[in-house]
Length: 114
Image 1: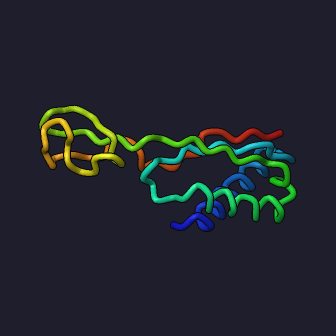
Image 2 (image 1 turned 90 degrees about the vertical axis):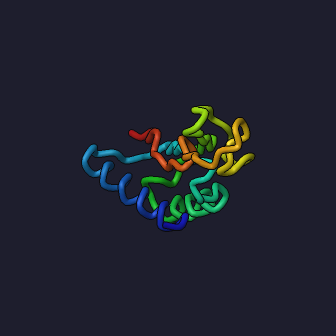
């Protein structure tokens, strides 16, 4: 799902929540974004700005993005390392038996609204 699709989905979720909870104003949305999630923060921000103009509910809502570092773990030596820097090869033992531990997330952390 590209950035516009992600934001469209998030806006629909917020609108549904606002109806259920009788909210009239969203002041901020905080997202957690994995470093290797494939989502481009600048595009996400641009899409958010587009929806702010279109929605009375979101017209003053700030978008906050917290990046989650990409960390890989080696199954052979059980150590972790920076995925972006070393990719799939463990810098500690040279093994390729590794998997991504964190950094692929896309989470709604918090919605501030009234």
